[in-house]
Length: 321
Image 1: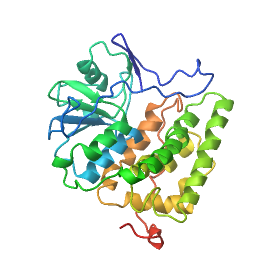
Image 2: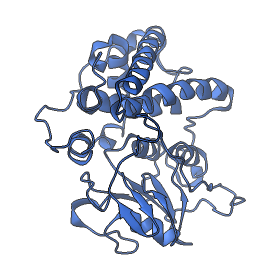
Image 3: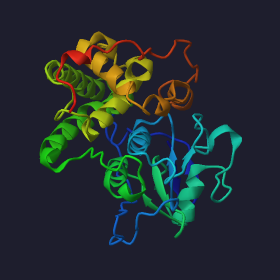
Image 4: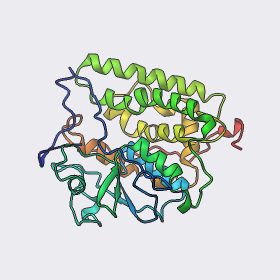
């Protein structure tokens, strides 16, 4: 993570001095929408938009999962940044430059869209290749666009991860999971005082306990099939034992210690197309090597990634329709 101010890159994560040790996530700045009919000014078209992601980032991971589930791989090309974030922020992966502009770093894509841009340079980024601007860099909104706007180009257009009858419940579940789990691991890991750490870690595990209980008698979080609520949670759960447990000091329990959450995580991981979006090498190397405020030495631990390929046991619950 880094900050671009008046064209100058600042290699830092988050300033917790003004917040007295608390991690506070900044708001995404590009918030336009792509619509099927083009009424927003950004019509859904095949091969018009490029998605910039990090395979390490859970927020970007959400968008990759929905792209895969909807079958939008041919309609929306993807560019992956390196797991090694250095003094200039996210470089592009494996020493390759950006295919759109030949740039070396993601911040240069932000300044292509807005030359006077100041703010955080984050993934995911949904970029309009036709107009040369960033449409949106808020993952929750990109997920909704991929779910509905591009159905004309999807190989699985009938899949709806945000069905109208379930939206109120999905939104309520999302709200708690976002605050205490998705963002909760960051509030725990980036806290710089004991007080702020304690204020984050206990609600995190209260919510994990609640989720494990919820999943004891129902297969998915809302309804009888996976919705966006499940995939938003999955992106955090799949990283938990590998990095959050130790690196972010979320060490009261691991996901493998929860019988229902662990089986649920395995089932989602084993769904067609999902495992291909998970890259534990990127995940582990990025967090431990890049986040020097948490791990100053940059030493990457030798422990193996979790094995999510075994039986998940979720068949005991009602099968998805």
